[in-house]
Image (cartoon, rainbow over all chains, first blue to last red; front, side, top):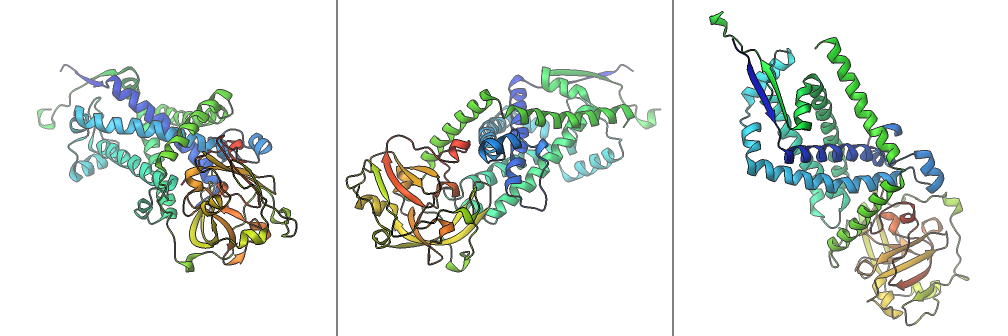
Length: 224
Length: 234
């Protein structure tokens, strides 16, 4: 049988927005960890070397500040690039039909089916076509970023946006939500990057805009 | 998953860590700092626009006010400057009609207001306290300050210095706080008074204030000079 040529295409606008969001989120996470360390919510801190905000000792010697000033500066710069790219991505995803075409339909039954298949390493990957678990993951991370932006605003401006924090159970609640959803996004990133490395062509598509792959069509069991 | 793929995966993860690590080093580059400073200036403008002149910070029932308030400074409480009422004079400067220095007694005789509000630290912790004193706008009116000027600056006995925008200085909840939890402000909390601003981060609330000036030139701030955002509204 002749192989099928699968194709994944990412238009330039999607690629730019993807990478701006990716970089912004990395900066937000790294700087957020340094800010967290200044006043930890839980019984642990992040190793300084993995956080963003410059040389801790040099900063302490110079300023009496462990680079939290730099971390906050990073955080409040990247929040703009993230928010803008995210809003454009949402608008563009809805208007262009990208979400409808590629992220839908997704239902509990298809998610269960694909999840079971994935856990048994039997989920076939087709370039340019998302499985149900993947679709759900994209919706989840889009929702997570929305919660991060809202809880972040509640923490940044607890007076000017006052009732907003009540949505998260108060100021401390907003901090906890901000932290836990961050952990969710980190989990998504690990899976997302891990799977990309298993199928590097998807990375090629997100960089160059197009990738193709030949696939042997599956012969139905009864035809064998 | 094949072994090769697993190794690629591991390599990829440490690559991610490396990105953060190099980002770490990036923070200390002058160019990066300049770009971040530009964002910070932009954030000052956004915050000034967002600031509601009559929007009040949430107030809380008095029962929630913490009695043993957290001490916070870059030096220990034993090093806090001990000012005494006999020698203390509040100096006034800049665009003010009557620059006569004020004694503690004169200050404490000003009209009083109380608030139970939340102090939010730039580090992330927050604490509710009860502060009492004179609204700064009342004092600014008394001394004939030019409230069309853009900023009000503060000098402190511990070497601290801060400054705020005029709209915040005139905000009804911005206080010259003489009391914490109904007691005369103890030395470590800034006797004879601190500026209590519930619409700003904690470090914009200077203690041990010894001079107030009114100006059009943006006053520097102790932590702002160390890289923190100037407006720092909340």
